[in-house]
Image (cartoon, rainbow, N blue to C red):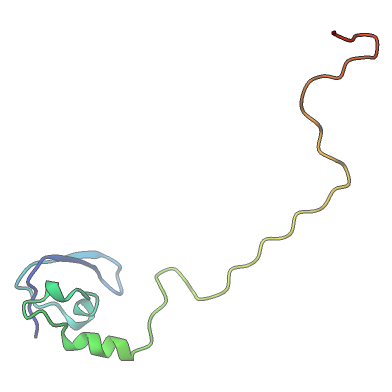
Length: 97
């Protein structure tokens, strides 16, 4: 089994708990499969668990079911125009010149 050359943080695949693995540890295959940086391993090569992971069908990210999100309902159209904002209109006799 491969040993780690560096400390790494991984998330447990079933409990989603963060785990710190120290240099010299020999992680379980399900944890080792998550460590994709070759520099993290003592021999610089990814262990066999990575080859098996590539053959398996990838899992959906946690919390996603793969279902397409529902499209938002269109906003109703109104015939009334939005009120104009700006200066007040003056009456014909109140002209500032």
